[in-house]
Structures are given as C-alpha cells and as structure tokens.
Image 1: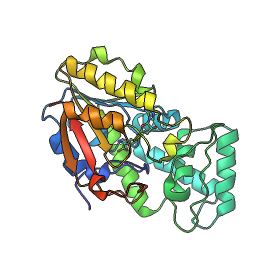
Image 2 (image 1 turned 135 degrees about the vertical axis):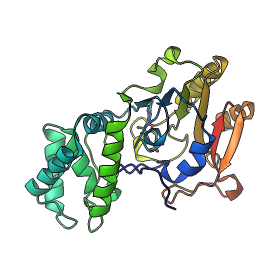
Image 3 (image 1 turned 120 degrees about the vertical axis):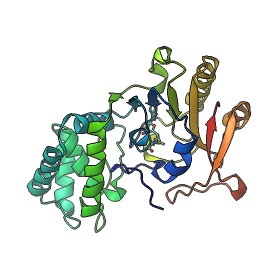
Image 4 (image 1 turned 90 degrees about the horizontal axis):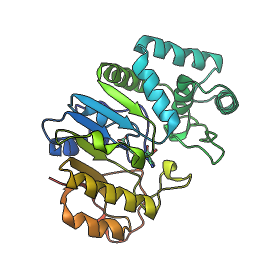
Amino acid sequence: MENEYIKSPLNYVGGKYKLLNQIIPIFPEEINTFVDLFGGGFNVGCNVKAEHVVYNDILKEVVSLLKYIQGNNTEDLLSEIEDYIKTYSLSKENKEGYLTLRSDYNSGIRTPMKFYTLLCYAFNNQIRFNSKGEYNMPFGKNRSSFNPSLRKKFIAFADRIQELNCTFLNISFDEFNFSTLTEEDFIYVDPPYYNSVASYNENGGWTEENEKILLEILDLINDNHIKFALSNNLKYENPLLDEWKNKYTVHYLNGNYSNCNYQKKDKSKDMEVLITNY
Ligand SMILES: C[S@@+](CC[C@H](N)C(=O)[O-])C[C@H]1O[C@@H](n2cnc3c(N)ncnc32)[C@H](O)[C@@H]1O
C-alpha cells in the first residue's frame, strides 16, 4: 500500500514504511526533539514533524552514509553513484563487477557512496556484515540495480534529509544521554525484535540482556514524564515484553511483513504493536 510518506532507499527487514500511516497518527502532535533511537533505514524519523530529529543506530556504515547524504547535495551524490556504476560496469547481470566492487570496498577505502552503490546491486539490497566486518551479501542477480524507481526514492530521501534539522549519532541505545530530554521531547524505539531473524541481528544478536536493559530504560523515561513509543511484534516468544507491556498502552496494528519468519502456529498472536506510555 502506497502512502504519502518518504520511503527510505535502504532496505531494512522490519523497516516501518508500510506502518507509518498507522504509527505516526499515534505520535504526539507537538514534538520538540524526536529521538529515533534505533533509526535503521530512517523511515520513521525522516517523516516525523518535529523541531529537531536525533537519529541513532549502532551500525557505523549506515550512520556515515546518512551523515554524508545530509552534508552533500543530491546531484553530487548521484554523480558519485553513477561514477561507481561506470567504473565497475555494474548491471543486473554483471556478477564479476559486483564482486570486484565488494572486494574493493572490504579491503580498501570505504566511502559512504561506495557502500550505497554496493547495496543497490546486492541480493535484496540488504545490509549484512560478517564477524570480520566485511560486507557479505551475494549479488542480486537479475533483480537488484540502481533502477529508475530506486533513483527516485534516493532523490526524495536525500532532499528530505538535507532539509531536516537532524543530528546523527552512532552509539548503542544504552549510551544515549536521556537526561538532556524534556517533556516536550519524544522517543521512538524500534529495536531488533527479540527471538526474530534479521541480518542486523546476526553479529552478536539482540540478547535477553539487551531487551531487559531497554525495558528498564523505558521505565525510567516514563518516570521522568517523557513520552515514548516502542514498536514490536507479539508473535515472537518474549516473556519479558509480554509482562512489561501490561503497564502501558498497546496499540494493535495491521502489520504485514512479507520478509518475516513465521515460527508460531498461533496466528492470533501474529501482531505488530506500538506500545506507548500515554
Ligand atoms: C528494526 S531496525 C529499525 C528500522 C527502522 N525503524 C526503519 O523503519 O528503517 C533495528 C535497528 O536497530 C539497530 N541496533 C541493533 N542494536 C542496537 C543497539 N544496541 N543500539 C542502537 N541500535 C541498534 C540495528 O542496526 C537496526 O538498524
């Protein structure tokens, strides 16, 4: 389903673009600083009305890319992509070109646009690094390319980032300085879903300890009268969340992720939710 929001040109499993028309109306109307604590592809933060947006993610390659997009004009960014396409003769069919670019990226200078161009030709355009920190998605044979539709998405997204008053951070959620926030601010939390499968979960993963710390932080934020919203899906086995959510308001959304992994038989629990403290 299309909507009026900007769609990130980064493909994220669990990206919230399709749910924006259900999530954003639940957010407070007036927001001073909006914190997108697990920003990922930035589908949410880039579409929210706020005086100031703080994007954070633990993945440094993605944060560097977004910062670079912010600091350069869109025409120059497109020329950089086109230069890489030319240098490596990239196309939907040229596997060798893709593999050479990937190996140059992994062993040489990792420029943000080299990373982005690589993603455009990768399988499912997905982001995945191995334990040595090497980008390791296979070639997106006959499917992935910097095609006109992706180009259009990239342009709209880059233009939006450049006009936003946005700060990009690259820290773990538990290192964020929450003490600077006030009651006019709002924190949106879209962590990896505990017990789910996503490429950004593969190195080290999202542990029960991470989940516990996050829920404790959200309780503290609540004690400080700061509003938050947490995305999750109740289909995953997550006893901590099941119990914790009863303290807050649970909004049931009509989630429809084609990419997710159905493990539970009980489909009545297959439910995307937004949990808020207001
Ligand atoms: C579900 S995705 C966010 C998707 C995003 N809301 C969107 O719509 O594009 C979860 C993100 O959390 C990030 N992440 C994982 N562990 C983290 C941590 N400890 N601190 C901050 N971010 C983390 C991952 O890199 C991933 O980008």
